[in-house]
Image 1 (cartoon, helix red, strand yellow):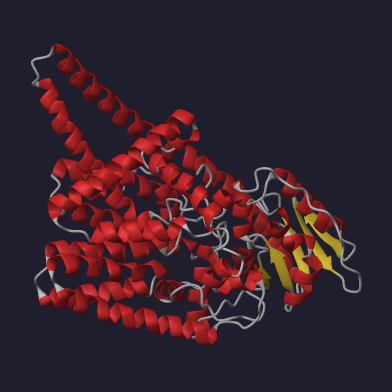
Image 2 (cartoon, one colour):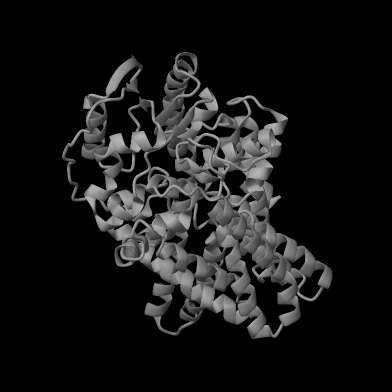
Length: 544
């Protein structure tokens, strides 16, 4: 019943926005659906929207296979978005259910588990991402299932086999699934459970190795940064200078971790200086509580997995937002709860003190904690009811305008067209025309390298020639990773290019045709003192 009650916010948002107005905005959901569509219609695992239809070597195939099953139930797009929304809802329900089960398996009381469940269920940004068909929540479900099996059935060989299947599935859902293997071996080293660990991890290693080999053999050979982004996470990181930029990446990503810690308790906590200070305290409390929980339970696997994931995201060239940290949010909640238990014991001691000042201080601490929790619950609930719908209504208006432009392209453009569009996946699914997004070099944002960040636009003619781009779709929401001044410059440069001829304009959308035979345009790009902020905006929900 508690889980069903916790599902009320997600259910309300899913029913109200079953058309997924934000679909394709962050691209991953669209690419996953396109990969599933390709599996269902052709049997090949390819990015059919991208010029040349390269193999899909960036995302593991298990979740796209599930999306392929959904696509087979209804081939009509965007009508079938309701089915994808239902799948996302079911995934979020499984996430909350398994989180609650894990809380109980780690020895928390019913009231404590209910409180931690409320923390997850009222996290606006977790819900925002939970509405979309992306692989972060599915892999989180598999991670939680693994640790539930370890805690609930540690000595039953048949459950070891079930755990092996779950871990292998996690490895074939998202790359971070492989982090379960060293986490389990860390637990085996402590408890000397070598046989169980071998049974549970060997299939996962084989599955991950098989996928890695297949991806390497089928990866597109073209050496271009945009293709690296679409087909190879590691190449996009390394070949764009990610190793040299690690000091800048780490410094910015630490700040993002603090934002996630604060905004996961109160949706806008990290937006102010006092709030950032409280975010530091919250993160420190979660870490300290996790250590207490490990000592108390003797289980280190979930904590080790969380540490490995945090370490990986710390050096990765994308901001570690709530979506990417979803698998460790239950651990974060348990750490906070364990530390709160410790703080409560200290308060009880103070309340029993003979000193009046200690008793008064204890009452003040209890009152402040209760007031803070009540305010956080009320503020998060209010933002879920008003703030998130406001963002989604804006997305719905933009999507309606975009659909008109996409429909015009479907009617008027040749079938062999290759179109540059910011929402390239949605454009392809609506029009059937090949498309690509001019994704910027995210490492350049961390390094505050304006030239590298804007290279796709300062050398746009070369990019268009490499991928055979024939048309451009421009909308007011395009290029959100850049500052307003840079967005305006990009739009102006594309419109002023002598090779680009405007062929249609309506409701804020502009469509350009690219003509051949003109020399490349050499135009200076504006610098921005806040370019590194773009690293935080990449793949982020509004407000994070």
